[in-house]
Image (cartoon, rainbow, N blue to C red; front, side):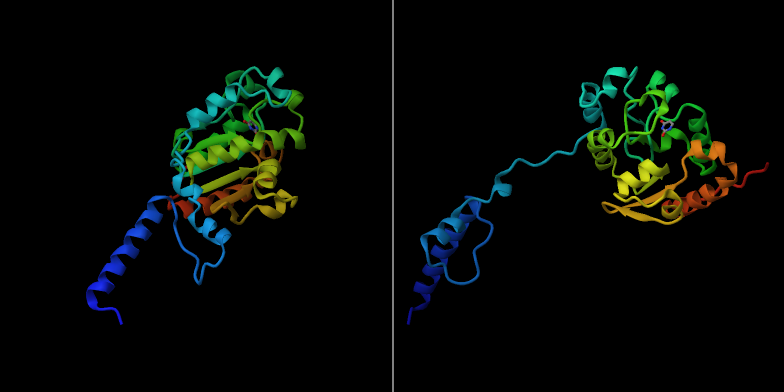
Length: 245
Ligand code: URA
């Protein structure tokens, strides 16, 4: 039987060996016996993620700079301006619409036309200002004649929206209308069935609601949208402001 000093030496050698393995990138050893040379090679192979450079978070400015050069779909050739998004880059609340219209294309800012003015009123009724939240769209370039986005356009553009949301890391997303809700939730369910309750989008609470352009044509639905926004306010810990009028 080995005496005490021999045991200490063996343990010290074993520790040195394990530290050397760790320094070369090995994060763990298999439980049980290692028999063949292949298995040994597998153990000694440095772990790639261990050696990889730390991933730095993307900024909205970086994504926008990339998008300014984007010609992945034909909409880039007919746009006046890219309509990337506007607001607080660290917003807790993000509104996602469908696509820029005529006014947005001219000004390079989302939701500045008639529907946008209604969205601004909704945001204000929640006790917030446009600059407190972040506002963007599924598509960043205007489809001509305000037609619906094509599936291929959505597929091409959507990675930019995913990256915007990942950069902002909001607590809540409000998806305005069918295209935003169905795209982010990867569903074909109608907006009338999706709205009114929170859904999960990659760990973020997502509330679908009617699009402000729809409300301009169907003002009776405003109360449904307000009910949805009250749920959002509750989730964010916001208190509704009592309006005098
Ligand atoms: N409708 C949208 O979906 N987005 C805008 O930016 C304007 C109108």
